[in-house]
Image 1 (cartoon, helix red, strand yellow):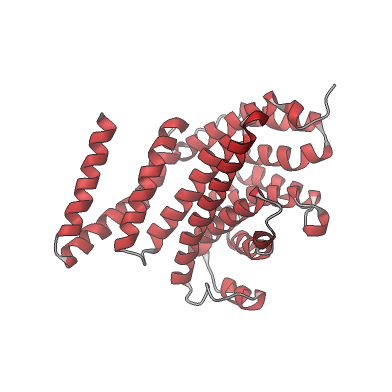
Image 2 (cartoon, rainbow, N blue to C red):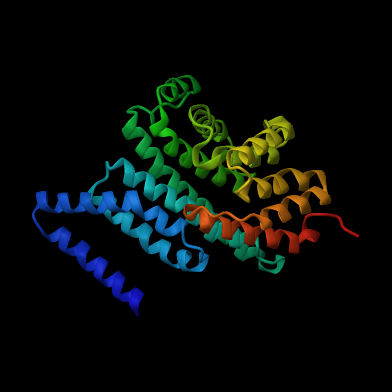
Length: 307
C-alpha cells in the first residue's frame, strides 16, 4: 500500500510538470533530473536487500525514460538510465536465468534473450551520452576514426566508456553464435581499454574485473589469454584492496572452470564469500555476488567432472 501511494504521488507530480508552462516545466524537470542523476544510485547500490531493489528498479527506469523524453540531451540522465538498465539486466535477469535448473531450459533462453535486449538498451543510452560529449562519436565506424575520438576523452568520460563497454560486452557474451554482435567486439573492447588507460582505478577496479571475464573466457584465436586474465585479476584485487567478491568469481568462472581446476575454483569462491565489505555504496553488489558464489559452489558438479 505504501509503495503504491509513493508511485501514485510521483506519477501525479510528473503529470503536473507536463501541464505547466514550458519554462517552469523545464526548470522543474531539470531539478528532478539533477536530483535523480546525482543521488539515486546510492539508494539502490547501498541497499542490502536484492529483492527490494529488483522490484523497485523497473519503475525507476521507466521514470528515467519519461524524463529523458522531456530532456533528451541530458548527459547525466543518459548515463544514469543506461547504467540502470545494464545493472538490472545483469543482476535481476541474466543471473537468475543462469541459475535455473536444466529442466527450465526454454525459460532460461527467453530470460537471457531479454537480458541481451536490456543490455543493448542501456548501452545505447550511454553511447548517446558519449555522442553528446564528443560530436561525431556515433558516426566513427572505422577503428582509426574511433581511436582518434577516444584519444580526446578524459576522466569525465570514464563512466560512459565503462558502462557502454561493459553492457556491450555482456550482450555479446550471452550468445557466442551471434555473428553480427561478435564482429562489434573490438569496438566494445576499445571503449574499455581507453577507460582503463585514463583511470584504471575507476569504481575500485571495475574495468579490470570486466577484462578478467573477457580475456579468460575467449579462445586464444579470438584474443583470449589466461595470462592477461590473471593480470587483470591481480590488479582488480590490489585496487579494491581485496574487498570485492567480483574479481574472485570472475576468475573462477572464466579460468578455473576452463582448466578444470576444482581446488582453485573452490578457494576463489570461498574467499569471495568470506569478504566483509563495509562500503555503504556497494552493499547490494556484495550481497548479490556472494549469493552467486554460494550457488556456484552448490552446483559444482555442473561445471566439473567430479567423482
